[in-house]
Image (cartoon, rainbow, N blue to C red; front, side):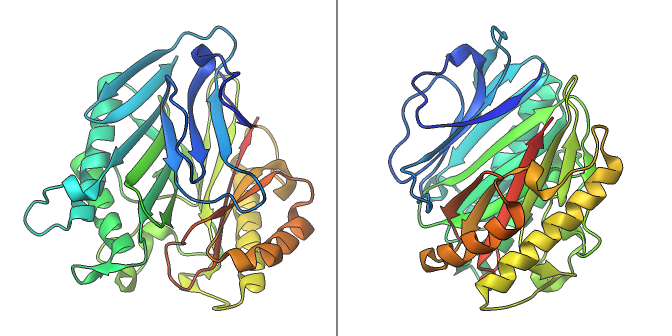
Length: 329
């Protein structure tokens, strides 16, 4: 069962039987649809009213749709897409956990329960968004709380927290629930790391009690296809933020890191080498005033590659931009 990713102005013209799941990025509420849809309530900065994306299956593909402990999911063949939103205000944390930490644990525990029940144990890609990601509560930055809950759930679900872990992003928005979307399948990812960076799952404890659980990129192989997911990538060399306060240099460094990831992915690819212009991208920009600079640098490096610019906070307060991408072959 092959996949494609489509960006569009409206969901209304899509036959629901062909949609696996999708995303609505924009301040306005999304339309009601019959398939799992992740809503990111923030601004699209490059002039669009909203970003609408759908993972599509072939014409006439049979699908199953369901729910599990708050996870809205749809399955086509051996491909599974799901979305779960949890409002922290309704979470009752266990002893020693913050509400966000508990919410992250609960979300991932429910996802793993669903994957096991569906016989599709392998997470391929995750999209995580939360309010006030750089804020501090209960004596710890909220992103670090999220990492604890996520990592604990991986271990509780008998999943590795190092090595073969999915591609992912984690961004902050002004308000809204902790929302996680995921794509999963029957086969494990081929993880890709960046020789210019320490693997995120091996970060030293200065970045929190538990390291983030994601690979820099992941290659996955639906039947007859190869998909490359590049995780959210920022101006980090080794494990240190570089070019603090300089959005131009941070954008260039982020693209240098993506280029390094693509070089590594090319060595593992079944379909040939990857170039920067082969992917489609989301660029998350912390300050709207930086958009023109980010776009200028991106255009110089990526040419005509499609890029959508989204207002969001990056997981470190000193990072001004983060870029992610994917290529479907």
